[in-house]
Length: 112
Length: 113
Image 1 (cartoon, rainbow over the protein chains, first blue to last red):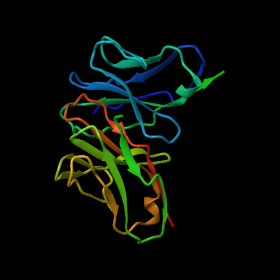
Image 2 (cartoon, chains in turn blue, yellow; image 1 turned 45 degrees about the vertical axis):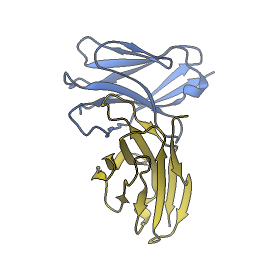
Image 3 (cartoon, rainbow over the protein chains, first blue to last red; image 1 turned 90 degrees about the horizontal axis):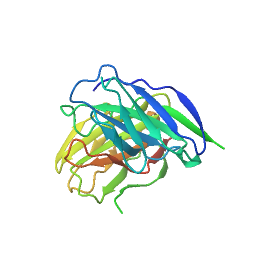
Image 4 (cartoon, each protein chain N blue to C red; image 1 turned 180 degrees about the vertical axis):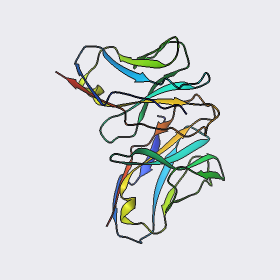
């Protein structure tokens, strides 16, 4: 699975959009980009995933650049409950299907 | 409600006393995994199972055992716990579909003294 690089931490004001970047410059054509988050010491929570098209669900939007070397997770209206560590993960369909390789993630702090 | 349930949530035990952490999922998922999370090391996979009676080692399997006798259950067994197994443990499950998301339990905080 390709390596990802994320900023260590970010701040966001409540109500504003939180844009979390992820660099995955070595991603290969069949690898998906996944985002999970972990609130305090709870179990990681799936947010969204995509291959090359932008994706949106009830939690967030995922923007993947045309060259697929980077992506951005967007929380459109961040709330205090969005304070968490956000993990960007790249997965290959040819790898161990059940394994997720977590990096260090981005610690997002949402403030009043 | 779709969920992965781990028990216990907190456990303090002594070195060498065998223990089992249970994990159960109600989503009929084929894949189940165990991870441990340690400060500075992130989440690391211990064991995984692709179906009933099919298990394999992850990245840090030493000192752990697992079994998968039923699809819904995937217990983690520490035959002789040691202090270096003090950690936060998570069970996860996912469907056979590669792109399906993984669902995690709420975690078990284990302390071995």
